[in-house]
Image 1 (tube, chains in turn orange, blue):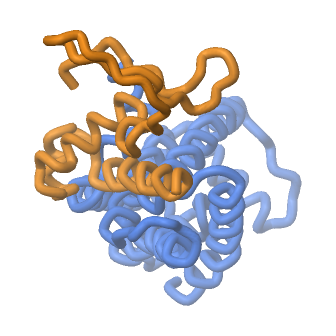
Image 2: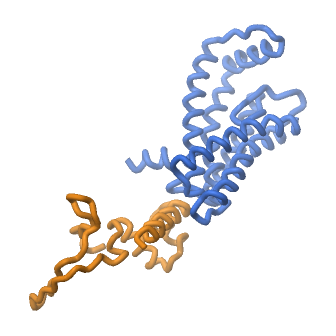
Image 3: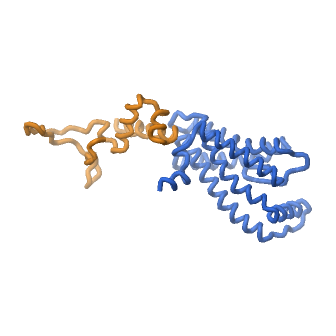
Length: 91
Length: 193
């Protein structure tokens, strides 16, 4: 992840999931107002998003990911299963 | 901090074939040390004086069974209860690696003074007399208790990581498998001895 200034996904006050209300164009300054739910990937924590990116970059090979992240195969598989479960709950 | 993580949660970093290879070395070492000290495993985490005529091979076979019986039960439990697609190589590997801690229970048995006191207890039990508990036995008892707890935590982590199970269900499966292994192992040992 390049942008480490974290996008908050949960309300700091009540803990509910946040939605996008306002978007802006940095070049012309146009602003769009609305009520957009965050895409599924954006609802994950930064660590989980990094994990998904690494998973895509290694063409979905858990073995390759395990060696890249210097973790054991079951640890990587368990993390992936946790994310899959999280997606399941979102649906 | 990272080193502490490796010590207390090695299965985060090691599993599969690498863990199995190292685990088999630990099991072989345990059998060699037990044989040198004149003991063998006649139950799950239970050692006894080697009977006459029992050699290294049977000591090794028992040591392998002490690992393999619970490991296979963990695998079967994982197949039934885990939400993940588990691999037998991970279950065998992590549980074999956890056998490392048995070495800490076995090495002190090579100390002649402790060995003498342990043998005296065995003889007293066989003769039906009251055994005398010496200082070495007390020190070893405390040492063994600590490593035993550490061993149980270690094997739980091995099962938990390799089968992706945690919480109450994992603890319940772990306790049942450990109790079954404790119940089954003496019968297996009797068949081999």
